[in-house]
Length: 252
Image (cartoon, rainbow, N blue to C red; front, side, top):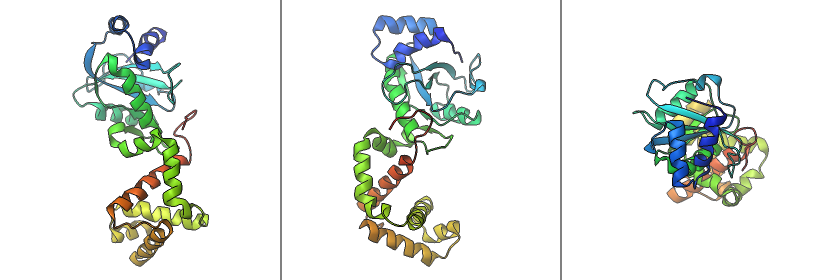
């Protein structure tokens, strides 16, 4: 794992995307990276922990190069960015390592096969970062958050979705709104089991039934109709992500 002005200068054009073949070759030689390999990009919403920047590969054999997305377009400008030449365990192990070191919030891109794809990977990692719960320290992989990633990628449509699905709910008394949202979240996390949701919330199952029916009336959507349930789940994601950005200086 390396970091410094020299490495940042070589990484910058790769992370920006659109580097010429000659520039890619020079960067590969200067960084000691193969032009083709299994790569992922990490974008952090907070400064990288010192423990994450050390010489040599990690226990999985992955090699890390840290830089900063200076001058990069979009929401990741000025953020800490890592290019990871992955080990056998892939991006899941890279994400786990960052969690163990207390990094986060952060987003991890899907695997790409060459240095020329790092610009696209950086953009996808930045999108994954935007799906992190506000105020959290979580590290998420884009492939785990694709529906939420679609929402944060089109904020004007997300705003419209929230107003269309949850409009009447958002005008309810704050205490009632919080209670209904909490109940819906518990019901979803419990796989649609009213009994388990009631146990988690510490109330009677009839109370959960009544709250869910109230939610259905307010939103004019039924939890038993798959397409309408999708609307409610996506609106819930927008509500979760709209309360605050996932780190200092975030856009969106």
